[in-house]
Structure formats: structure tokens, C-alpha cells
Image 1 (cartoon, rainbow, N blue to C red):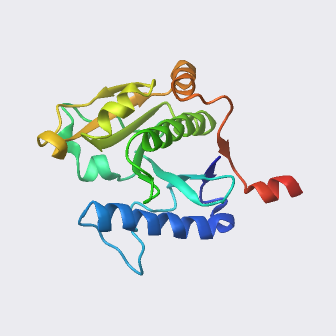
Image 2: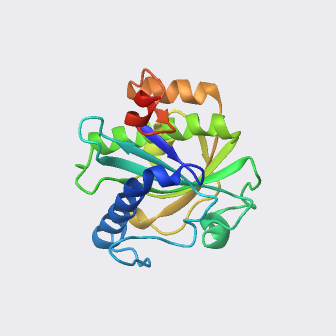
Image 3: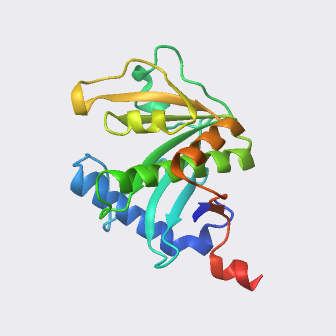
Length: 209
């Protein structure tokens, strides 16, 4: 399942958020060698703000995090507007109905290949489901050469905002995806997802209610 963690329910997910930031440091800083700020073993930046919504997928058997992503409304400063605007041929879509997805982070021990593709597919489905709830009509994202084709083939209606920067595996590119029910249907079909993935409260609290 994928939990939606927003300003309204973050207190219930403090332990998961801490582990998410720990995983982000392990993946982005320790493994990929990105030059990012970190403190006390956690990767946190200025876009981890009150406006951010996190999607955190957990393993039902172990409750451990399997992947996560951050969503941020584009009417406030965000990565594409502040750091990657040169990736766009024309000004990137912005507004209250356009959100940016960043920091997609598989758990550090996730094997390369099919397991990571499955995580990405489920997270894209979770993003679309979340978008329906919050009235999000488009999602922008910046990705590298490894993830770009996987995200494009996932089934949602995504297109490049420009030719990108860099070459080979170092190339990065900006995209925008339109949110609609047909895109969700195709993503679910592509990844064998038979039911909604998102939740607002931990499973134990839902059972108690």
C-alpha cells in the first residue's frame, strides 16, 4: 500500500518520514554521489516544506518502506522552476493544478531491473490516484536517462518539455504528464495492479476505526 502523507497527518507518520529521509541519503548521496545537503544521516532540502505531500509505499508483511516520492505544488518555488528551467523549450506548466514529482526513491536494497520497474509502476499509479483526490491535472518531473524511458512506457500520457541536458547515462530531461482515468487504467494494466493503492492512515488505525 502507498500512504499519502501531508501536513494534516504527518504526526502519524513521523517514523516513516524519518526512514524515508534516511533512505534518500543512502540512495542519492551515498550511492549516486549527488551533492546534496544532509544532516544526522537524513537527506532533507528546502522543498521538504509544509506544502509537500509524500507518497510512501510499505511492504504489508514487514511495514518497511519499499519506495517513496515527493509531490509539490508548482505555484510555489520547486526544483523545475528554480534549478532546471533550462530543460524546458517553453516555460514549464505552473499553477495550483500542476504539481511536481521529485525524489522517487526505491529502497536502497532493491535489485536493479524488474523489481525497480515494478516499484516505479506502482508509484506512478499512486501519483495518479492521489492527483484525482487533490484536483491535480498535470504532474511535472525531471529524470535521468535510466528512468525516463521507463516512466514514458508506464502508460500515462507523458511528454518531454525539452531535449534535455547531458549525454548518455548522464542525460537529464523534464517531462509533464496529463492526469486522466485512461492513463490510470493503462498503468494498472501494465503493472498488474487490480485495486487502488493509496491510504491516508496506517492500517492498524484503519482497523481500529
